[in-house]
Length: 106
Ligand code: FES
Image (cartoon, rainbow, N blue to C red):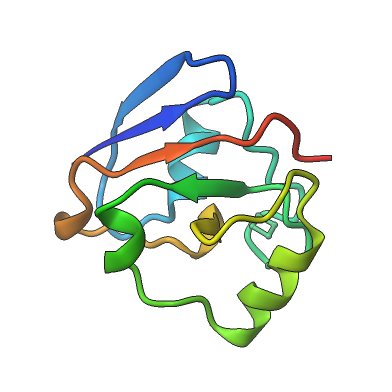
């Protein structure tokens, strides 16, 4: 599937990714600037924060309690569409997924 990550300065990274990986893993593998993912997906860092664009934001399962809790600790402002990219599992129905990257992860 194809996903798009839009940096705060508007630069867009378009990636061909395989399903089953997390969005964070795909972004880190492709060296996308703006996803830090210090904890490697253990949900303890909140430096993999993204803003998911519609219609995908509404399609994702809502955050579990632990993800919702970590979203309180993002460096950039939390918005209704804020998610941790390590908790987004890439699947066929997310083809075209577009996320905005916050201007800071620390
Ligand atoms: Fe640390 Fe997602 S990689 S919370």
